[in-house]
Amino acid sequence: PEVEGFHPNQILSILYPNDPNIHPNMALSTNRLSVDHRLLHHLIVHQLLPTGGGYAKLSRMQAFLMWCILSKIKFCFPLLMLKTMVRAFTQKKSVLSFGSILTKIFQHHQVRLEGEVATKLKKEDTYCNNREFL
Image 1: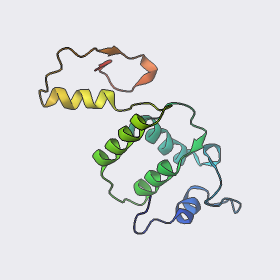
Image 2: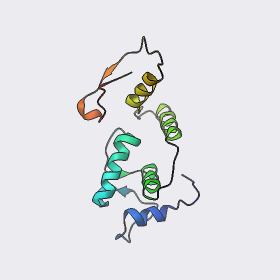
Image 3: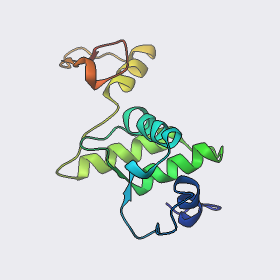
């Protein structure tokens, strides 16, 4: 992402402080992250920006979100959700995320969901107490 103050080299020096071989054009691996940064990455890929698939690689968007959080830079989460869903809709192999949180939002605002088919989630699919989403 192009954001004022964000430079890929800066986040790389934060995430990989003792690795002089890291540069912006290479694939970023999570196994080289510190324990704290791995935990932050885990929260991002499971809560903020859910992905379908492996977690061994660090995407540019995940690195950007880590930079925002570590630098205490605000970001617009609803816009991030929307862009993620639009991208998922346009790609063949992608997961449409945020079902649980959107269901909670719809229920809170009393959006009528009659006729929608609920899907039971497995325990490992979510940290949320509500096990159904539409």
